[in-house]
Length: 256
Image 1 (tube, rainbow, N blue to C red):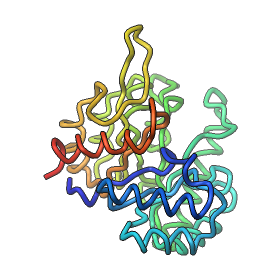
Image 2 (cartoon, rainbow, N blue to C red):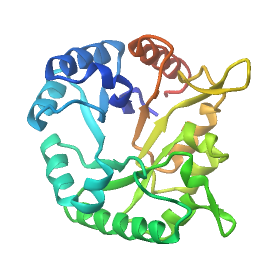
Image 3 (cartoon, helix red, strand yellow):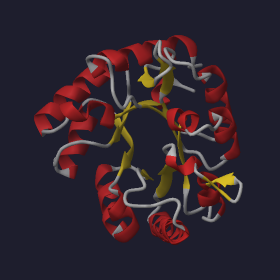
């Protein structure tokens, strides 16, 4: 993994990207830390052209986005237009909004719509990925639903954005899941899993939790991962400080 492949998921900075001015100030700080790429998510109603021009002005690549779940499933042409405007080809289905994974009809509908949306994006030279949480490790017929989602969609239409924290939270093995998606894993969310003195789990800076990133990263590289995206859903203090802490650990221990 090269340092230029390490990105920030802007959901981490969602409270600091509500306006164009806030977004510009945040990207300046992100670039000063050393990150050279971002994933657009959780930002305010900022015009696409402005999102792109501000990033380009800081020398930052927009490597991917998260788009609304309903938009991806029901209006994928809008996603195609937005990605083209941002100058990126990757997006992710972010969260199974309104879907009951214990309901087979819901699961069937989700799988069919993901495959169809991914096919439309592929025709435009773009790539739809799936971002997991813990929900997808609900087991049906002896296997987690995440396995079924990937098995029942065409790899050309739906690729992976494995989230290391949520795999762990769901009882999975992050190393094994990045291996499982060989040649189907362009994006990886780096998110560490810590516990407090009572055993309660929490989001942690990379290298400050318990996940084995020294095994996860080479496994992801072997699976063809292009972007390694740092995300921390909540931070104990200033999120920029947490992003700095993660970057410092990554640069010192994980990049080649």
